[in-house]
Image (cartoon, rainbow, N blue to C red):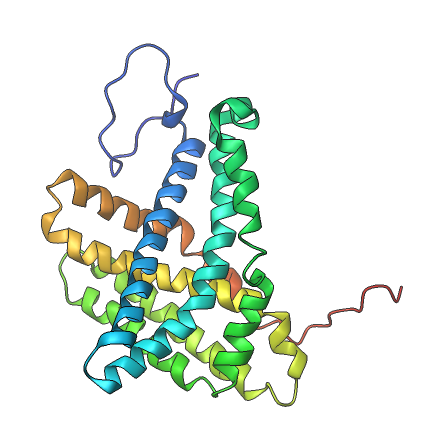
Length: 272
C-alpha cells in the first residue's frame, strides 16, 4: 500500500527505495510526533522547575526566592502527575509502533511500559497530586499564587504576538489561558458552598494546566526558533510546535468543558 501524497507544509520526504516504511503512514507519523512533542516539551518544563528550585534556594533577592518557591510548589504536582500519566500513555504508544515485536521481551519496550506504570502510583498517586494542586494550593489561598504563575505563563502569548514567525500561536494561547483563569476563579468562588465539586474535576484541572504549560513552552520554542528556521534543528522545533497546537492543544477544550460540569451528579457506587 502506497502512502498518501505528502502535504505541502510537511517536512521534506526522506529518500526511499522499495516498499514504504510505516513511518510514511499518517497514523504512525501522528504517533511519533505526539511522542516528540510531549517528551521534548515536558523535558523543557522539568528543566524550568529545576531552575526555579535553584533560584528559590540561592538567589540573593528574597522576593525572587519567594516567587520561585511559589511557582515550583504549584508546578511540582503537575510535573509528577501529568508527566507520569503521559509517560505511561506514550510508552504504550511506542509499543504500538513496534507492533507484535513490542509485546515480547527481546526489544525492551514492553518492560518500559510495565515500569512506567508504577510512576503514576508511588510518591503520591496522580489523584492525590491533583487534590494537592487544586484543593491544597489553588483554593487554599483563593488562587492568588496560581494567578501569578498563570500571568507569567500567559505573557508568552504577548511576546509571540510581537515576534515575526510565531504570531500564529499567540491568539489561541492567550484565549485558552483567559478561559482557564475564569474557570479557576469560578471553582474557587463556589468551593465553600459546593465542597465536593472541586474534588470531582481536580484531575481535569491538573491535566488542563499541564496542556497549557506545554503550550507556553512550545510557543516560546517557536519564537526562539523562528529567526533560525533555515537550520534543520530549529525547523524541526517549529514543525513540532505547530503540531502541538494543531493536534494536541485542542484537548484543552474538552478539559475546560469538564471543569464546567463539576456540579453534575456523581452517583455513589454500591447503592444500586
